Image: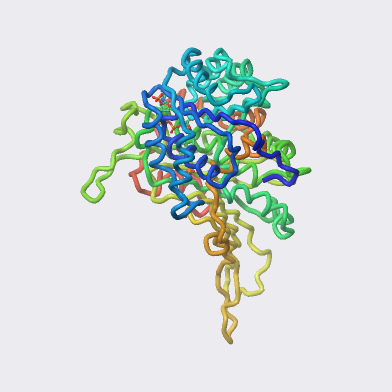
Length: 496
Ligand code: NDP
Ligand code: BG6
């Protein structure tokens, strides 16, 4: 999505794409469907092979059948789709093995050799596994001789899923250990929210229009809300989620990335380096979150339509006395000239009353109201950017209601993507996988960005976890902990 020339896919070279954790939720539900979408649009090199790798025993055919369940015909509707699926699945293979075993990866290597045939082959390793096994995999890949680079050889890249570590220290340690296998150039730390259409649009909206930037500061903005909620619980992901919690799962990465794009200065160019330089500056201007500015919650079980919806503590894989938060609200600050005094109110939670990811920029009231007789208090303008579902940009304004009389009414300039554009909105993973294959790192997290992000959340994570602070219970499907509204009220924010 950068303004400078984007690196291109090398269509003339073979590409082996290894999906480590190929049996898992992410691989099956997101990565393989995204690869199919790219493949069916002819965006991938024709000489490509996909290799699933995980511990679960499976044959190639079983892997293909499992993968097929989630492929969609979005880009190739009609009869063509089945042919494209056959072509795609014929390129999918599976190797069972242990994550810490070079021998297992040598078995994989032997299978890859059947196809690669030349040393000049590109390799992409996608780690769709819990971070606890990243290092084992990296070492085993290196010991098996799969990570190659240099003259006459193709590139090797690794895509890693968040969370990268548990705190600043463990993240640094992981970075040091990974550096023995992969250089920073080869590492693509993915945050799939950066691939979402409306998140990518933030820079365009801010810097390609004259109307927003002059108002984009403490002088005209009184607060920014970033709200993320899901109406589902953690389901089968208890083993991953417990001990991780909502701050590490969503806030420290997805929502903080959104915040940095909203708050950063204009980059010198829209390229990987300049954009990430500006994001780092914003993150470094943010003081660590204080416990007084944080609310934690945990969902409890409810009866729904005669069925019991389990509470967090009843979910499989969760410790019965767990204090892991499933919901949090935080007031974050950016201590620079542009933003000093403006609260960035971040809310995120599972098991809430809907599914939404939305940014709300709240403008200050007009300094004088010439319409006081008609409307004594003019509602303030809000710019609402709905990331999902139903992508939209909505500017709430005061307008004259049509008619002979002068009557004021709050209304909205409303850009709804599904009505305004006929193009298919790509899934975030389609965009990011293509970028990783092209070698465009603009939408991936740089090491210094990651460190700065951890610095904001590490002290409060240590404090709350060290003292085993018990999150406030909230019923599944509700609006979340009551304390969130108190925190919002303290900052003068009306909580919706
Ligand atoms: P899964 O729990 O499905 O794990 C993926 C695979 O890893 C499993 O199929 C399993 O394969 C193996 N695995 C699971 N637990 C362990 C363990 N404790 N030790 C070793 N191997 C294990 O996770 P997801 O696919 O949901 O997530 C993978 C990564 O992607 C995580 O880092 C997550 O944060 C991230 N992510 C996930 C998203 C999603 O939508 N699911 C979205 C964004 C990020 P096997 O037993 O066959 O070896
Ligand atoms: C992942 C989190 O990073 O993002 C999940 O681990 C969350 O807990 C998911 O559900 C949300 O992604 P999306 O694209 O469905 O909003």
